[in-house]
Amino acid sequence: MLDRFESQTRLTTNMANEAKPCPCDIGDRLEYRGVGQEVQIEHIKAYVVKPPSHSDKAVIVIQDIYGWQLANTRYMADMLASNGYTAVCPDFFTGKEAWNPAGDWSTFQQWLEDKKPTDINKEVDAVLRFLKDQCGARSIGAVGFCWGGVATHYLALQYPEVKAGVSVYGIVREREDRYDLKSPTLFIFGEKDDVIPLDQVSALEKNLKEKCTTVDYQVKIFSGQTHGFVHRKKEDINSADQPKIQEVTQPMSREEEAVN
Image (cartoon, rainbow, N blue to C red; front, side):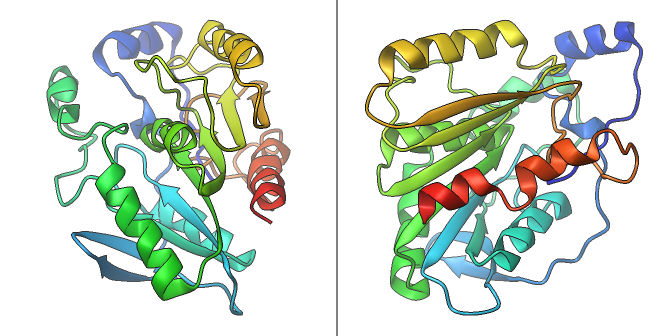
């Protein structure tokens, strides 16, 4: 899970907050081909990678705004497969064009209108059928980044059959039931995330303590990290960040414990 942000001045960051709802475009884009294959799952395409030996465990890997074909996200799917999971990264935009980092950010909300991360039930249902019927999955988890982090939070509210979730810098904000988790969830944030500031993280944790009483959850803040640090950073750029990235990604122990 990688991403190393280029340095920016505080003024630039503040301007980005107003003009750019998501700063994912300032991370590193990997030159990575992936070891899986693209398949058709009912009405959507997906990137699927199998583990070295048969496994009845699977993880749904959910994209950020740059879509299911982003090499960084496929790298995460491949890493999960190497740890013994069938990993599937579906096109939750259902063929609609992913966000282009060169696009006009003033049109972002319009672009997002038909790509809500809380309006993916048809796609999730199709992926679950695929994993169960064609991959033999019996224990299924989810991990998502940014847009996908919101989607993972949503799955935790709607799909108890998804046994565990890791929501990476994403929060469902608009739903009344957003604290009523149905499956164990790990929420990961960066201390210096300008998209999801710490007051929002604190509010999430406070409300989960009061309202989420039936399943386990954890809210973890990584010091010094910004939005996108898990899947858009390269560990070798700054050695101080490497252990923080590895804590999340290798071997993603939180999700493994819950799914197993």
